[in-house]
Image 1 (cartoon, chains in turn green, blue):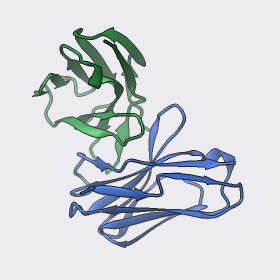
Image 2 (cartoon, each protein chain N blue to C red):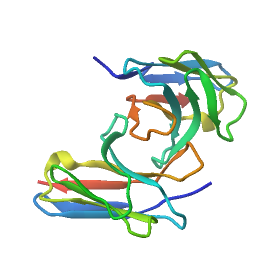
Image 3 (cartoon, rainbow over the protein chains, first blue to last red):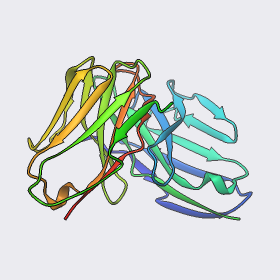
Image 4 (cartoon, each protein chain N blue to C red):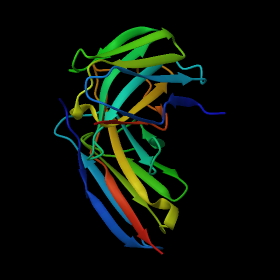
Length: 111
Length: 113
């Protein structure tokens, strides 16, 4: 099945630093989404993107739908300890009801 | 009020047993899903129901059987459990089958010994 390549796999940063992660695919996606999973919980939707080139913010989080429609980026500014968790990109292709998930980026923030 | 609730939270059982996981959503969504998250945290779709009708059935062993008595409930029954079935199973729901802002439950950690 279709796969999303998410990188980096893990990140260790200091509190206050900015973070960037991305997701790429060899195929075009119509929708990109970013989820965050806290330990022992299910993923929670952070940002949804529906148009190529779209740039959307949610507080300190900003995500972009790549122009080629084959990638998406998530940036977190001024990280804080509660940003710790696993961040997943997810995408949907036309002609399918399925949402495909990337393998996640595990973020650790040192106070 | 919990939007998507799964029970049980933890399930430890022996190989060969049959077990069920229940899921209920109070969001009024039409579509519900079961995902499996393996030890490497990879999330893979198993099944999806839209208003009680099966719309996604991935390559899952037929020991796994979903049941949706109404659009607010989607249960997962697993027969003859195997060691490889150990994982975290997530239920999720969305407004419709082409709506991708899923709301996930908190997961059921299944351990087969």
